[in-house]
Structure formats: structure tokens, C-alpha cells
Length: 399
Image (cartoon, rainbow, N blue to C red; front, side, top):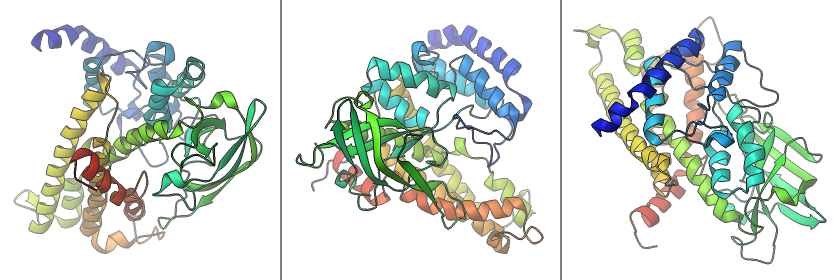
């Protein structure tokens, strides 16, 4: 291992020098709520340096460093990726690009897409040119996803798609959608599903935002009325979409689970508690809060180490497996717990909604984020579904 570490020193020096020269000062600060760099044809960055940082990182393939160079990545091995992440953390660099393209459809296309599909979509994902959304859940097919009814009927070289999706995150901002459709109504419900890609500006695609209790609208209802999609946009084969869908869900759950890891946090519970509750002998004054903060930190560390171990396996070529359900379940519980502790620390200041005279912007945002966190245990597969998967596929328990 020492030989490997020694061999990486020139690479580390190169990466460190490049980051120091190319990472703007504003990109070394916590990311505000309106600056998530998800890219896309209509992306509007409040801070122009957010786009500049994305473009610079993409030019080196560092937005998706493990991907092959021909698809927009840097072609790094797992040790080099670890070095890049360590050097970014060293200067507190923000992620240059996030979104479903990188965490979900990109990895799925690398595994299941044909060469034409990889060449068309992966470089655009890596460069942040296209933003994606997911067409999975339907009004009557949520936890029972395989019960979906959106239909796709062959018409020459196209499919004609009709149906409805719900909880389509970011559909109002997305350029393309990866979608599950039923192409064979006579087959078993798992065998009749096809995985297909299409442009959200296609005639017949409409959407309507769904307002949440947090006051935000990241989710949408999405409708397809005689949407014409080329048959070449099917990923793998017609009727084999469930295989792709399951793998993509594993990527999604691993990604959602990472929100519970301390490395994703913008807020220090210790600093928040010291600001609102004061100090006693240099520590948080309230003993119960000290215990809650310590427990949160310990759980964060355990989750982070487990995610790191799984990431190393993935970077060696092993795709995510059922353990992603463990991350999804535990990570979302950790994120919910984080906001519960924050609200307790804020006390009555955690009841803010809109009054700028009574509450700070940070307090109002914390209240809304606390409400939003309640959906963590539903999106990407409910906690109950994850526990069933863990019981059957990780622990090997009988049905």
C-alpha cells in the first residue's frame, strides 16, 4: 500500500495545484439553497462562478472522474478518485455538478446502454449540458412500482406513449426523462416493462408542480398524451426494463442515503447549539443537547465509513447491490434526525415561516428543510420497502 501511496504523490501534487489555480474563491464556501449546480439547457446560475467551476471541472473530466475519457470522464482509478475527493475537501470545494444524470441514469447507461446511447448522452451529462428526471412512480403504482400502467405502443419506428407519472422530481426543469413504460400488457407485470429515454420538450408532455408542506415544489405530476418516441431510445431490450430499473434504484438509494453522511452537511450542530444555548466550561451548556449532538456525530461517522467502503467496491467495478437499501434507510433516518435536533436547538425560533422581522432567513430555511426531510423516508422507495429488501436480500430471512 505504501508503494501505491508513494506512486500517487505526483498525481496528488498535480491535482492540488490544479484545484488551487482553478477553484474560484466563492466555490470554497458552503453552498446556498439556490446554487445547486444541476446543469441543463435552461440552467440559470445566480453566481456565474458556479457555471465557471462546473465548466473547469468538466474540462478535466472531474465531474465524473471514474467514467472513461471517451464519455466525458477522467478515467481515474479508485485510488486517484479518492485523492481528488481528499484534495477537494482540503479546500472545502463545492461539488461542481450534481443531479440524476451523474448518480442515476449515467451509471445505468454505462452498464446497459448501447454505444450510440452512451456516445449521445454521457458526454452531455458529464458537461452539465442536460438535466434529467425520473419517470417511475404513478398514482396507483408507488411502492408496487411494477404495477405501472403507462403504455407504449409501436407505430413504425416509434413508440406512442400515454399515461401519467407522479412525484417526478424536477420535471419542470429537466431536459430529458428516463421512463418506465408497459410495452406488453399480456406479459407478467415485471416482464412487460420497458426502459426508455425521451426529450421533455416532445409534443404531448406536460407537467404540474406539487406543492409540499415545506412550501417548495420540487415534485411534479407528469402527463404523456400520444408522445412519439423513437424505438432506438429503448435501453437494452423491450420487456427487459425491470432489470435496468432495479439497478438504477440501487444507484438512487445509495445517492439518497448519502444525505445522512456528515460529509454532505452544510451546518455544524455544535456551532448552532453554542449560538442558541450558550457555553458552559467551553461546552454546549445543555447536557441533553450535548448528548444528542454527540450521538448524531457518532452515527454520522459510522455511516460515512460504511458508504466509503461501498464506494470503494463500486469504483473497482462492482455495481451497487441490496446494501444500497441499508444506506437509503439509515441515511434518510440520519438526515431526519439532524433536522429534529436542529429544531430542538432553535426552540421557538424553529417555528418561523415568512416573518423576516421575527425570524432570520437561516431559521426559516431550517424550518422548511425540517418539513422537507419528512419525505426522505418515502422517496426512492419507502423505508418499509427498504427494510423488506434488507431482510430478504441482505440478512437472508424467509418471507
